[in-house]
Each structure stands twice: as C-alpha cells, then as structure tokens.
Length: 234
Image 1: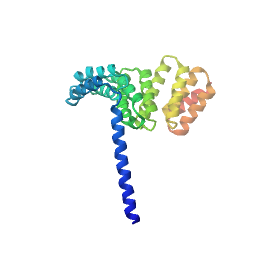
Image 2: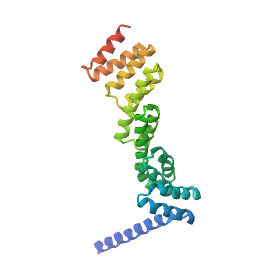
Image 3: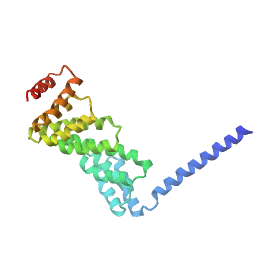
C-alpha cells in the first residue's frame, strides 16, 4: 500500500514538473511582439541554412522591434560569430546575457566566451596587449573556473608588462606584473618582471624580494640569479 502511494506521489510530481516546464516555455514567448517573432523566424530559417550574413538584418529587425528579445540578440551574436566577426558579436551577446533568465545564461556565457577569446586573440596577434587583457578579464569574470581564460590572461599580462617596461612605464608595469603574480603565484617570469619593474623605479628592497621569490621557485634560474646580484650591488 505504502509503495503504491509513493508511486502515485512520484507520478504527480512528474506531472507537476512537466507542467511547470511548459508554463516557463510558454511565458518565455509572452510579451514578444508578433512582428518581432516573425522577423526572428525569418532570420532563424536563414541561420539554420548557414546563410548568416542574410540572417543578420532579420535578427537586427527583431531587436529593433522588441529591445528585450533576448533570443534575437543571441542569434544575432551567433551569426556574427560564425562569420568570424568577433567584435561585432560582443554587443548583442552581452545584451543577450543581460536579458536572459538565470537558468538560461549558461548557453549564452559559452557563446560569449567564444567571442571574447576570438577578439582577444585577434588583438594579441596585432600586439594590442592592453585591449586583449580587457577582454580576457571579462572572460574570467564570466567564468572564474575557466583555465583557458586564466592562462590566456596571464600570458597577455606578461606581454603587456614587458611592453610597459620597454616604454619606460615601470609604475604601471608593477601593477600589471602584480596581477600576473596573483593569477600564477609560482611563475618565475611574473616575479622576474615584477622585480625588474621595481628595480626601474628605484625600489631596490621590493626588487630584491621579488627576485628572491623567483629564485625560491626555481633556484637554477640564471636570469633570477643575475638580477638578484644586480640588485644587491645597489
């Protein structure tokens, strides 16, 4: 008897869950203007056939008719993404993320990350390290557990720090290398960069500490040993 009642309870819970999902799905379409839905459907038909360039005006039209149409922004961003237009994809994907309910954000985050990595890599190839670090920081904020975002940002910070040192901007380089150390505390290059930046500003005590930290991590590193000796002579 008890087993039978439990079975009935499970069935009722299942029915309620299905009903809830149906209600959520139905509500998702409420409030969207019919003309926006029609424009979206036209764009989606083209998108599904791989005709992304032609789909874009329809998704844009849908967002212009209804500025809160999250799915239209998502597919507008995806269309740009599929065309390799990373920067163009960012604004609609950021908007889609902002407008999407919490439970639906994971799909948007994954796509937005693709766009952020794409534009960051493009800027890195052009030597625009400052811009690249900005996009990668956004990626890491969106997905703090992402090893890729962390590693890419770390590399971009090292490159930016070295560029700042070569330009004579040691003060800002200290901040950049400090961020790199925070991301990867056991990185010899990050501690060495920080030591060189402190050395350039004349802060020999902190330069010595950073060089010692690099040697502690890798006692065989010749660059760290040479820098340590150079600081000790001051």
